[in-house]
Length: 155
Image 1 (spheres, rainbow, N blue to C red):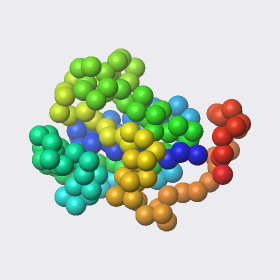
Image 2: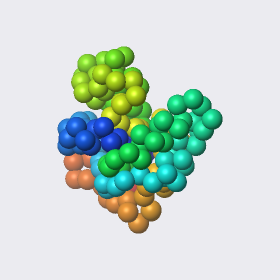
Image 3: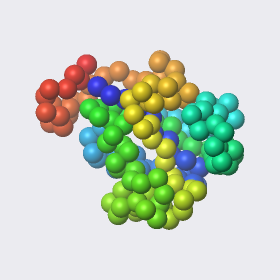
Image 4: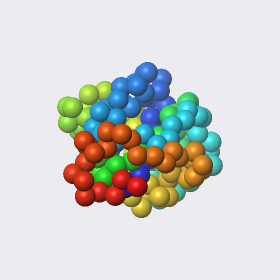
């Protein structure tokens, strides 16, 4: 079973899109394993975006992500990272397909509403930036047999 990190960024929180974003992922069939609202610290932003350090957009991204509240979530399910990234759409709102989070709610290149781990390996690095192991719920939801093909390990 894969886990992935999803963040509703400050622009998504300020625009009151948290519930709609959460519902889209939940409606797809992934299971919410952890959720919290917080104001991202400089340290957390630098850890999260460490792979981008030195790039031209890095300082602006850190400043944006620490500018207001965010909502951090851990989602579980087969191919969770790939599914969430597809639901989010292309990074830049103007390029995102209708039906995706960014395609339906975003028109900005800078303010793109959500962050999602781009792979299971990234999720393994990113989740601990926001959640301790004790904060992630371990259970199998009662509807899992109706959402998956049966060949995935559901714990």
